[in-house]
Length: 272
Ligand code: NDP
Image (cartoon, rainbow, N blue to C red; front, side, top):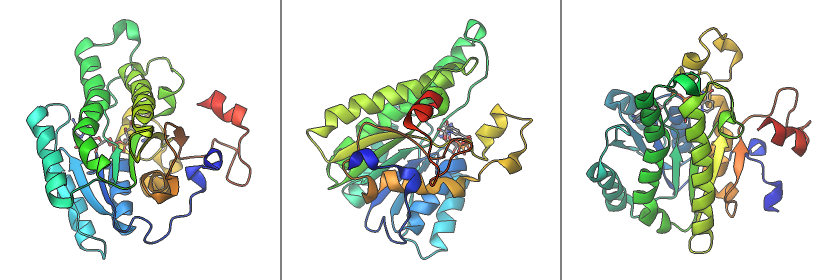
């Protein structure tokens, strides 16, 4: 049964996340913003985590102006945060909600597209820290709240370059490989002792600031908007993925394929 699960086929129900508390990093912009809004509009109480207060407040206001449950804001700069800052987020979640049902790590930094031979070491450390170590640290402090949920999901945002190495993607690719490994290790540890599942999702190409930075000459009109990609996130953060853990998913079908004309599993795994 779980072998058939594919979040790209998910059809969202209006209240599918009702009663759930879901935290999203990078919630102020790009994919994180779109998923945070979609979670709220599907009934979740969302914890908006990010570093830019004005952006978080804008998402908060958009949720407040809708019929969705109220959201809360947790300011956390993943580059500079220290243990007390992480603890403050975990304490605030536990005090307000008593549990956490979903945690999406969407925040990320591109770094530079540079050969390993010339990759700047401080940039390497920054990208590994924000994209991998901070995701580990935040997950760790939130585990007690996730364990307090009857059905919790942790979702790390991966990338095609985190599944098969690609020249010049440097620290970004290595950090995404690290997230894939972290997800597998953590899923294995939690499977027998908790109701917490852990998966990764590669969103595929999306019209965001990071994509513009990586491909400045690309016509953005050809890219899906973040709002068009939220369905697979809802599937992996909500009840649709109950029992699915330790797996790596894609949010988009490869070019030339679709839900009605899916790729062969061999073709897809060679692409990823
Ligand atoms: P954006 O640049 O729009 O979003 C990145 C987010 O990370 C922003 O919200 C940004 O906050 C946040 N962030 C960066 N640094 C920090 C920090 N130090 N502390 C806290 N938050 C931080 O890009 P996307 O939406 O595209 O990226 C979302 C995820 O999707 C990333 O993990 C990315 O690797 C992944 N991805 C994206 C693809 C694409 O084509 N767009 C393809 C494959 C994967 P702020 O608003 O303050 O800048």
